[in-house]
Image (cartoon, rainbow, N blue to C red; front, side, top):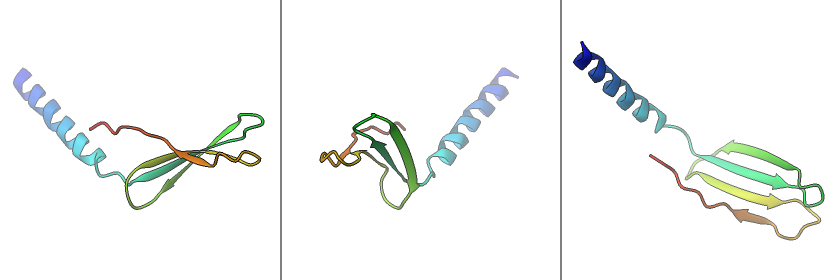
Length: 73
């Protein structure tokens, strides 16, 4: 019984890992108001790799900075 339960658990984990790897790429943009430091997060589905940016709204002149992140698999 234990062998069957363990085999089913491994099979389920393998199927779950394969199913979650088929997700679409996303672009995450974090907008920050430089006066109040209020943040707004916008997530969009786009073709290509996953990306993340941190953008300061006007009157700041810093623009958008890419956020470095690692994807775990």
